Length: 205
Picture 1 (cartoon, rainbow, N blue to C red):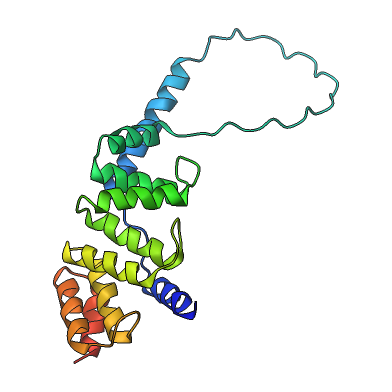
Picture 2 (tube, helix red, strand yellow; picture 1 turned 90 degrees about the vertical axis):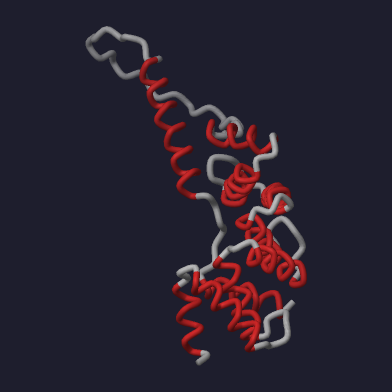
């Protein structure tokens, strides 16, 4: 258990968070929000102006009713695209389910969507799945699986994954310490303009 806790804390210290296709997702969410607001405004009936009615006597508050599950239109469309096999949609929908953005949170479903997208070679999804195996989000914590998917993400060109893998080799987290492997992955991340990797590489010289 200690190695999981240490690795989880290490990733937090690195500032590594879930990967999404942010511009696409934010734009998608905003467009749906604006469309809903316009539709709601157009649907308002014209109400004639009248003198205010006297306030009724306060009544006993009714028992609270269960709130319906709310899923945003954007998430519904992401779901449609994800069901059709779109890897980017699967990754972004996984993020929404992991964080509860636009839909109730469901860590297990998020991890499964990351796995589906990762199986199609989506680097961001590979790294998100690796994170799930560290923090036990939707899956059982598993250091070996973390390294499998982190390496896959790094091989697919994810700079954060390269940096993380390099630091794991540097610190011996789940792998044997290897200055050569550490420098190799940090150098690759630095070549992709990863500032933390470049700074870490400088300290190894």
